[in-house]
Length: 281
Image (cartoon, rainbow, N blue to C red):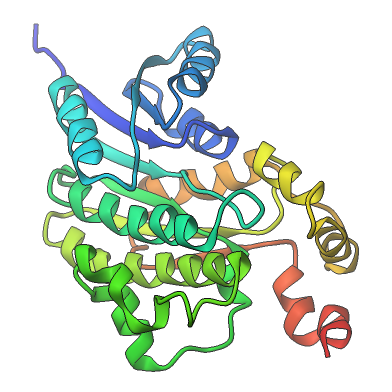
């Protein structure tokens, strides 16, 4: 009897969005759940395991090259890495500007570069960015290219990311998420040489523990205003992001790579052209 090769889906960030995508694409594959906190990964693994998925857990700090490389070693020891779901990050209410840039910007660039070395032919990945990247005013072409292509270990030394240029945690988050989308576009070229694809999703307000931190934090009123003035008039759910993630990582998305998908219920449209634009002037 022919033994089937094990395909591994690596999920970085064991939260509800990563789980929602993994549930849709993980059947018959091995899901490796990695998180900065082992207990978070273990809780998520229990839920997925009881639903019939083959799951194991690992710890990872995406701001550490050694930690990311150790995760890759663990994943490749299980089988061939056919999928990457990168959903780890910190929000403006959770961290300082420097930490946000280190985790959300540098960490994503590091993950994409390292996993781009091992992703299997026919494999795919998705990065969870944010609507915040779409609310940042336009950068220059040179700044966009710098975010997309600067060597990972030099990324945080860019002039535009120095403390006197980054105003606050929200600004750091917006720059990071804009950088995620640009980095995905550039990495799609390199991943494509291995026959693999990579895209990003920029969700709006999705009800997760991170979003609840924001809703109860200093920007909570602004978040509620975004929801109430958006075209859809509600927050999103992890399952809705999961549907899009499954499309991008599956056969039906085989012609899509290097793209960013904004799904925010119309918040960004309202910010630039609707009631939120009027309130911000």
